[in-house]
Amino acid sequence: MRVPFADHSSHRRPLNVPRDEALLLAELLPTACEVGIRNGHVSPGDIVVVVGAGPVGLASVIIARLYSPGGSSGSRNCRAHVRPCAPFHPHPVRTPERFWRGTVEDRRRGPCGSHGDAGRAKEDVMNHPVLVGIDGSAHSSAAADWAGREAALRDVPLRLFHASPPLPGATVPGPALDRLKHMGTRVLRQVADALGDLHPDVEVRAEQTDDAPPEALLAAARDAELLVVGTRGTGGFDGLAVGSVALRMAAAAPCPVVLIPHRPGPFREVMHAARGVSPVVVGFDAHHPVGEAADFAFSAAEARGALLRVVQAWAFPAEAVSPQTLVVTEEDRATWEDQEVLRLSDAVCAWQEKHPRVTARTDVVLLHPAEALLNASRSADLLVVGRRTDPQGAEGRLGPVTHAVLHHARCPVAVVPHAG
Image: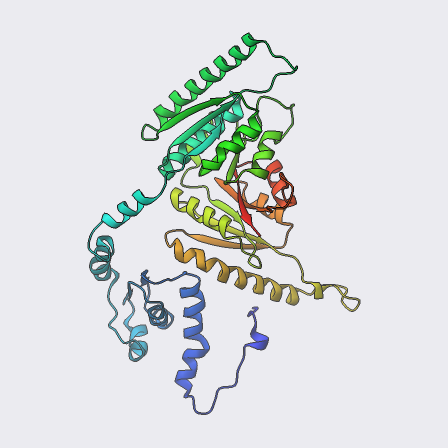
């Protein structure tokens, strides 16, 4: 059995510390703190229920009180375990049923005993729309279906946007332009009618322009909460994974962009079948956390009621390679991996406290970041990655990891811009 950090975490017991108190510090309290409280992401106001009030269970209740929970309780099924630890627990242990009856209803009423605060806060939020590009292709149809569901989840309007494709030649006949505009109007009407039937509570708007699609979408995205596009449009060639317009949006849009791949069969049926079971995956670097991407991922997982997988890829540190070191021992690898696991867990705690209803699972893998994300997202509902913005840099630059993910992911990919 391998005990992480055992080589440098053993300490001699001071003579003035009784053996029974040292026993608590050696096993019970550290186990309760690390396994129960920290991994459980206990935060102020949470309800903490420990099933099984043995020594570690009671220690978990004690340590949870340091985090100012809304209430804490442990079951008392095994009195033989409870009696030896009772002197260390300042409050009687109750059954979970009694605890829930007295605490959950108070939390439902809220600190002021009313339900109006959340509604008033919601009214103060500006409802920027979800913007989706429409060109009549199967990919844009899939994007429209996804955008409609997202607008319903966010409770914001849905804006359908169609830009006429540029025609060759310096002078374009008027009838050709009229024909293109008529076709665009018909496509928008068909999509709007279909989405209106699927999401009757969503306000659907349609807009058409004669400008070039990339510039028109970028301009429209300035007032959008989210931009959704298909990975390809009506142009391109067979085998092309991501079209030029989609890449331009992912690299230059001022708001988060979600690229939707085309899936065989009715897209809305595929997405509906995956709803509630497929996780949201986010790429995360605990050494340089990106708050915008983490906020987006936690909010998406909370809206869907889905598991959130926080994936971090890591590599051997510089000291692993030296003239004296020919191979990396399993012990060294385990130590470095444990350090990465703890660092990631600590970094995610800040977002877990803001989203206590989200179940987040951290994954640390020894792979290239792109490969790690693609493996984790094979059955995901959404993959979230970041894109660094540079006000003084050239427009349209994507990092190598984001570029690889966009070309090979089989699920929707959200690209979230961030500074720094």
